[in-house]
Length: 152
Image (cartoon, rainbow, N blue to C red; front, side, top):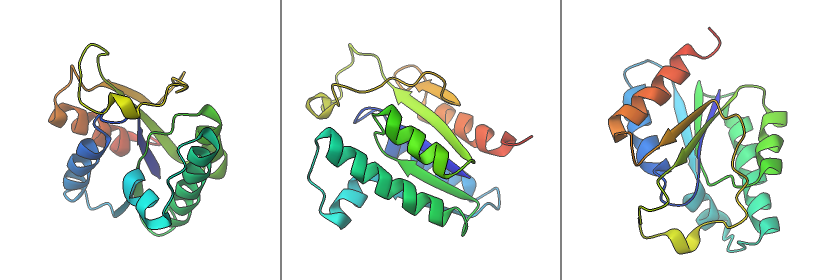
């Protein structure tokens, strides 16, 4: 299974991923994770155009698909701003859960200048979490429950 924590920069993706990983240790599920910032640094990708972002997301999707054969859960933490990039992963792997993270637009978190202006807001994610209104632990428990109940 691949679980994608996605949303604008500073919406809480990495924070939530760390909490989910800590909670997965108690479930007996094996996992691996791919972080968008680390992926860019490994591949020296500094192209933030739409094409550059989609290429980066396809790379992440391909790696996640490969890893999904090795572990129970692959956690992706990337912006995934474009519907076509999300569809690419969903077409590549049938076991993808999408968790859309967002925060109140009046709340400033300091990375708004990195926001993707043409972000395609998802129509039907498996889970949406407003990280301005939900605690970090509450958000992590929602994601863990989503993982545990997947396929039931």
